[in-house]
Length: 107
Image (cartoon, rainbow, N blue to C red; front, side, top):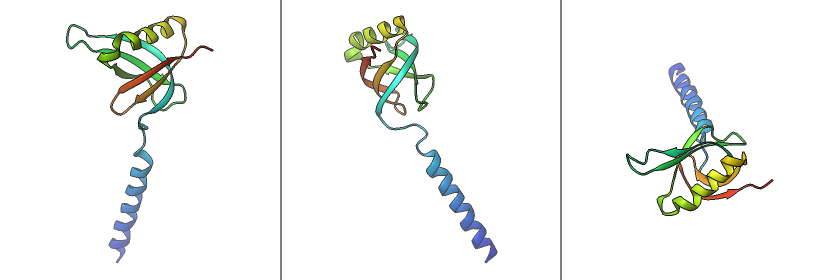
């Protein structure tokens, strides 16, 4: 009987731990971010990436790949914001490391 209680306690603690850590990275959402790097390895696969940090702490120094179809437009926004030390407002998925929309914050 004592081993059943111990097993139940272990299962409960494990379940609670998984519940708390399941959302370490949030799903796709809007984030206000600072930019620390923009660039990539175009000789390898043509991908351009940007390293972002969410101002509210959802993620830090995470690389996102810029979608090829909108590369010029999104890259222009990132480079302008980085040059001026401004933040950007992005719709991003920190798990898949993709972003689809970017706005320059003029404040």
